[in-house]
Image 1 (cartoon, helix red, strand yellow):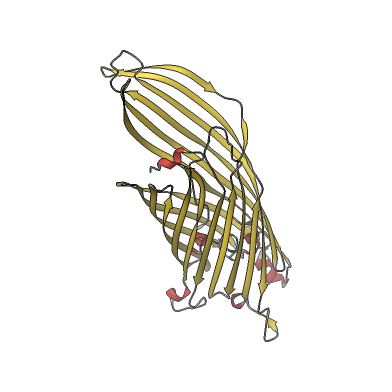
Image 2: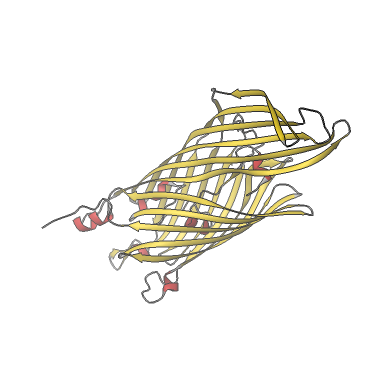
Amino acid sequence: MHNPFSIYGMGEFQDTDPTTVVSNGWANQTFYDRFHVNTNNAASYPYLLSTSFEVGINARYSILNNGPINYKYWSGQLAHMSLAFPVFSPYNELLEKRNRKVHWGMGIAVQPYSLVAYNYEFDVDDPNAGLVRNKHFGNGGTYKMVYNNGVSYKDFSFGVGLHYIFGKIIRNDQIEFLDNSGAFGNITSKENEVYVKGLQFNFSAMYNYILNPMTDGKKTDYDKQKRITVGASFQPMSKLKSRVDAVDFVYSRQLGTSISDTLSYLQSNQEYKGNYNSTYGVGLSYQHGAKWQVNVNYDGGVYDQYNVKGLEADYRNTGMFKIGAEWCPEPNSFNSFLKRSKYRLGFRTGTMPLAFGGEQTKVTAGVIGYGFPVYVNRQISHVNIAFEGGQKTYSEKFKEKYFNIRLGFNLNDDYWFLKRKFD
């Protein structure tokens, strides 16, 4: 893994949406499901019908382009892990013949948030110092832990998410004087370790307008309801605390030995608090029963007040426009596996926080997805896969083309909080 642009700030931001949300066009403002969870929108949790445990992984192939120079690499990681459940079991309602107006869902999740991974060097011929080699390498990143709660009343739902960001980022810069044959001091190194943590609060809401609430004098089955969903979310300006440990030293390699001397070492017990970001989003979707749905979403980020100590970068406000769709030929088909499956696609275009050389990073990408049910012990689970291809444009000279494969495994259990009855 190597992305030289992760040298700045928090590193390369990761896509934190689950596989199903991504393959629906990154529809984080409007996506909800009875078996899948939308970890970035707590207002979706009350619609869960059963406990959902989900694990996602991804693999990525990238081509970094700098004019005539191309650098290709593979990378992969755990994308997310989540556990969510309805607090009031829908099966208790069915057994007790109750029609509860208030539903409550909650869950936890952990996911990579940003990644630092680079290692490169270049030589400069200085007229005074001779040939000088510059080396830069870094690793680490940040993670996000999520605790979501969502409550619905009739057709309206509201959610609150508590997000905890934490991590450690290491960056090392070296200067080596290749023409210096002196006894000492031909390599100078500076290493920074930055520990970061902070809390974010996310507020979200959804409203579902059912176009056909009644059919033949009875309430329309859920799988046949035609629904218009409006969703929105807002995260107030958050702050991050950082602590910077720095060490400067010089060392020399001669005759196969290594001699080093520390110039300075600073272990800071002081935490710096700086502004991070604020986010917002809106979305609209139409669902034609369980057969098909289309959506359009927009997300924005406010970064113009960013000033996290030790993770300096030129971050700017962002905007991302997204559209997506899903189709299932026959949701209740018993004799055709392909007809029960779901086929998805999406597209997005917009800007990302990092500005390089005065130009803000732009991204354009498309995704196609496929999901199918799996029955284990008479309970339904799902496997979802998404294929994403796109391009990030850092500047006129620096571009990255990438292909991402996402795989999500979703296990459902209907029996959590089920009241047992004995005769």
